[in-house]
Length: 303
Ligand code: HMG
Ligand code: MG
Picture 1 (cartoon, rainbow, N blue to C red):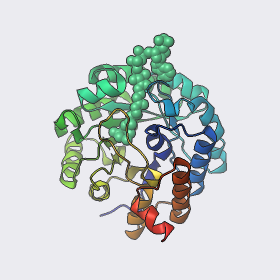
Picture 2: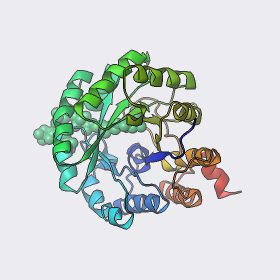
Picture 3: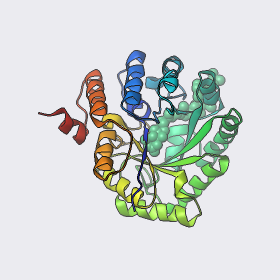
């Protein structure tokens, strides 16, 4: 059976923009986030408090975040999570009013090294005080796990290896675990196999979210597979923006419009105003100077 409602975790302003070379002005980012909230999205990942040299596009996190926190009063229930890799990042985020953070681990050693300059074990140790510090400050913590299906350097990733790293993130205190297909290579059978492996490891499906990139056009099929396994939290990016600068061949995330089209077609509630969202992505595409890759955005924009 499919769920009656899905919570969309919108990552356009973070995963979407982090890969853009041309710096997007902070006013444009703030307007993007405001428009996403106005379109009905209630989880809008805003930015990352990472090292500014590692992700120059998000070096304005200090300036951006206070510009959007007021949206939480305007839209009751609006959540504005931010990424934090370490205690420095957590301190910066809390100082600017964040009440929801995410740490991000890797299922593979190569990507842990390239993304966090650490081994998998070292990065999990780096997250330990971040998660406990965030919880002590009353914040909610999500754990991302990257390279859950395939890694550009290591190839296919065994489900047991993914489950092991995922369990570690949950043990640290992450409320939710987002399983990332960072480079968009997964197919539906792999999604079934991995969710089955987490189920057998005793992880309630309510704690699992899925995070698909759409490199091979499989993100919607993978999402539907996850929904059939009971997943009700899906990450996506308005207009299909996205990619990870540290993962060779990572392209855009599943487009939120494509996702909403499918979910509404299935009678699944999202709270999202699809026309308003597509207009936002068309506006953002204009800001970035190239059309949205989302099929739904193109179709909704008309000829
Ligand atoms: P490092 O170079 O090992 O850092 O980077 P360090 O701990 O050795 O510290 C070096 C200096 O950086 C120190 O300054 C720190 O204070 C400073 P110094 O004392 O030398 O003057 N520093 C910081 N400054 C500001 N903010 C910070 C911070 N941390 C240290 N937070 C580090 C380690 C983790 C910082 C670095 O590797 C990093 O920032 N990585 C972020 C990479 C990233 O953002 N990747 C994209 C997000 S993940 C993703 O997209 C995947 C996802 O979408 C899911 C999927 O698709 O799979 C989530
Ligand atoms: Mg991603």
